[in-house]
Structure formats: structure tokens, C-alpha cells
Image 1 (spheres, helix red, strand yellow):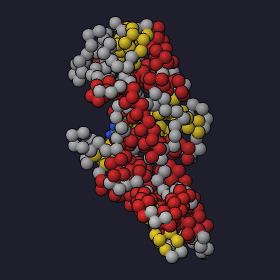
Image 2: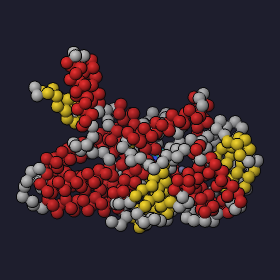
Image 3: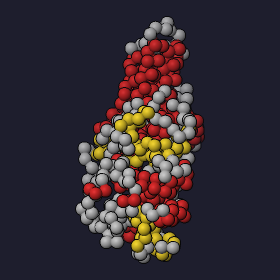
Image 4: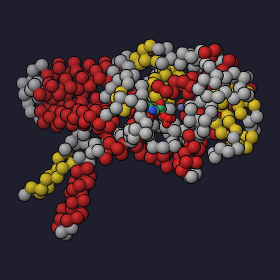
Length: 469
Ligand code: AMP
Ligand code: ZN
């Protein structure tokens, strides 16, 4: 099937093609690990995972890299303000390395909890300082960068296409509007590749001095090149990454290689909470734990974050989570119904053709710039077909196969033959033992633990049985 994606760079949908037949090189901007990732960050990452799974669904091999920013990301995204990690370290009175290591590990655990397919690698910026310095040397040699007292800047006037991605024109980029412009910059839009600051807590010795650290943008250019080469098929991020981050990445990478850095630039629109911006003061900077504490499963959150179109704003509320849970549970039931119906021989009516049409609708929707709401409508159609008694035998088996394929992208459905079956049996055996030992506390503990995982136990004369929900 022919795929097309909206390319931020050209501001239109374009036919998807790759540099190498059948292989997609994809780089996703990952988190800055000064805190735990929140559901806003997770929307951008879930979008990347859905994109990756969709590409695999359509037969591509995906080489996916998602970075971890653990130094150099300044509070205002540009060159001024404090490094987010250093600011956090000062606030907590802790070592920034310890903080970033903790949140990076938590980030990887959160991805697993939300059912992400693992990327090929999750590189950390601090592990790629030599590659960044090498790029910086290259840019200095080719006249795209200049050094002033240990600071190295990219000269935006040396790169004609600067502003192409974001639609900003160099002459319109006002200095001093949002941030103070450093006097040593030749042009107020020049951005830092390398910075020097004796007070910085994470620093590297280089020929620019002993107190250096990288600019945020060069990190992604260097990590992408190190793991995927100088040319990518897709580069993603949240919409706030378009400028300055991705604009600067393009300038650095293309000025140095002379080649087009990324063929497709894809950005997820921001997630809002209760119709507005998330903020600490409103107490709505939610994480996975907040959803779990309210009784939701992580997959309900995953679904709430992926059910809209990635280029439409998405509003998060606890009511939306209820709806997400209901939709996911309906898909669980659909899987059970289809499995049951597949074993029933019935006269094949129009069911077969119906399933084929719905499956085609789903694929066409995903192939058209990941039109998720349309794809989900095809699954609702499948459910309706079951409710209308249209499916049995072979058509139900095909319907189940369609649902499995669709869930290869969604990653939210529990199929009875998959999931925690063996685990549950082992837990039930442990609980039976506890009951035999009259260890009621232990027996209750196991029952509650399973309940929290969405498994209800029922003690019958024939033994203990379990069901979901
Ligand atoms: P950061 O940790 O600030 O580097 O952000 C990590 C990723 O999360 C970036 O790609 C951001 O664009 C994205 N992001 C941050 N806030 C939101 C939000 N509210 N909605 C969607 N994506 C976001
Ligand atoms: Zn990045």
C-alpha cells in the first residue's frame, strides 16, 4: 500500500519513500531527563511508537533511535537561561548525573509500561560528546561556525535554508524579544554549538577550554549521525521542537554533510489538559502513576494518547480516560466474541466481504498520514458487525485476524491467549497454597494484586477461576 505523510518541511502530504528500499531510518527527539516524563511528552512518544508500528505493519524494517537529553537543554530552549538539569540539581541539592540517570531509567520503564516496541538504541547526549566536538570542528573548518571565548556559535547567515522548516526568516528573528542576545554573537539568531561556563555542573575539557558543554541542538544532529548516518527518512518531535530545535539541527547537519538531513519531518500537536496548558501550579502535570492511582490500566492511557489524529490538538481529562477504558474494554470483548464465533459454523453471508472492506478501510486510513480516528471507526464497524450477528466461522476468524493486525499498531487489546495467563495461574496456585496454610493475609494480598491488574478471581466448587474486569 502507498503511504503518505504530512511533511512539516513542505507543509503538505507527500508520498512516502525511503533512501533504502524497505528500510526506514527514524530519529525521535526523546525526553530531557530532569524530571519524570509527563503525559504531554508521552503523547509525542506514543505518536512515534504508533508511526513505527504502522511502518512495520506495512512491511518496512524500522531502525528507530530515540535519544535521551541529559545535558545542554536550556530552560528557554534557546541559548540563555539555565541548563534544565543543572537547575534541577541545584534545586534538589543533588548531583545532576544522579538525577539524569534516575529519570532516564524511569523513562525506559515508562515506555515498557505503555507497551512501546523498543527502539534500536536510546543514546544519551553525555555519551556522544566526542562526536559533537567532531561536528563542531567540521563546522568551524567549513566556515559555518565561529568561536568567541570558549563559546562556539553557528553562523545562520552561512546557511541559506535557515528558516525553511519553521517558516521563520532570519531577518524577522528579533533579537532581544524573548531572550537577551549575547553581545559576542555576530547575528542575534546565531545559536550555540558549544558553551563554556565555570559554574556549570556537567562539563568537558576541549580545545575551547575546561568548562565546556554542548548546545542542545548539536546533540541530536550528532546522535542521529552516529546511529543512523547523515541522512534520515523520518525525524519526529512535538510541535514545539520545530523551532528552534529542528531548524538548528537541519542547519548544522546539512551545512556539514551537504546532503538533505531528514526526508520527512513529522510533529505531534501538543496535548492539553482540561482544555489548557499543563502546569505545576494547576497540579495537572500527570504521569502514568496518576492514571494508575485512579484505577486505570496503563494501556487505557496509551489509548487515550493515540486515539486522536496526531496533528490535531488532543485534550486530556479524566472523562476522556473513562471513554478510553470503555473503548479498550469493548475491543477486549470483541476479541473474545470473534474467537467464540470463529468456532461456530454458520452460513457465510455477507460477513466475509464486510471484514475485507473494514480491513481495507483501516489500512487506507493508517496509510493516509496515520488517520487514527478513521482507522478506529473501522474497528467500531467490526464490533457492530458482531453485534448485528453478521460474523461466524471463517468470517469471524478473519475478523479476529484483522483485530490482531490492527492491534499490532494500537498495542492495547488483551487477547485471551496472550497476556498474563501463565502468571495468573501461578498466582492462583500461590493463593491456594496460602489458603491451605490459612494465611488469609497473603491470600487477600494476591487477590488484591490481581484485581489491581484487572483480573477478578472467583472461588467456585470446581476451584478458582479468573476473568478480566
Ligand atoms: P523535553 O523533555 O522538554 O525535551 O520534551 C520531550 C518531548 O516531549 C519533545 O518532543 C516535546 O516536543 C514533547 N512534548 C512536551 N510537552 C508536550 C505536550 N504537552 N504535548 C505533546 N508533546 C509534548
Ligand atoms: Zn532533539
